[in-house]
Length: 158
Image 1 (cartoon, rainbow, N blue to C red):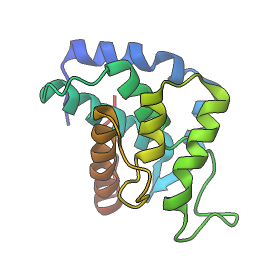
Image 2 (cartoon, one colour; image 1 turned 45 degrees about the horizontal axis):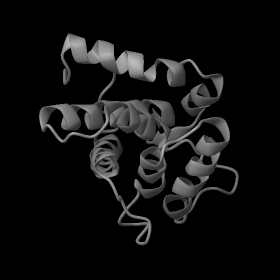
Image 3 (cartoon, rainbow, N blue to C red; image 1 turned 30 degrees about the vertical axis):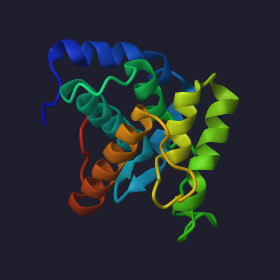
Image 4 (spheres, helix red, strand yellow; image 1 turned 180 degrees about the horizontal axis):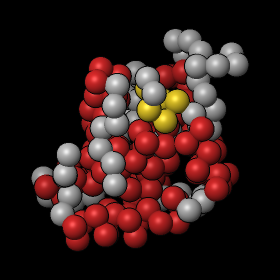
């Protein structure tokens, strides 16, 4: 599905360049998120949909922070289906793990931190979106996760 204009795709690729070329971030390609969808493909879908919402609905979130936070929102770097990670608590714990991993590797703004730590709201009841960008990513994540789980294909790709 074509969401973004050619110009928007170019802008998005520029915003993602440093993250997409980082070997640590590329590790997300090794792990399954939903069905057969890798964590990497999932975060790219969330990035694209978040960027689309922000642009098309004129929501006014900072594109750079929105994109970085969306890309890093599932930066937990393990397969939650294996090796003792499986179970009902992954949804509760992985935002904090992703935030810790991201903070060790990157310098994050308060907005980017809030995006990562609150993207599972309302499951994480007391860690909620406090800014516009975090609300956008939280919504885009729910849409992409639902689509990937039900349809079992990638949501949106670059």
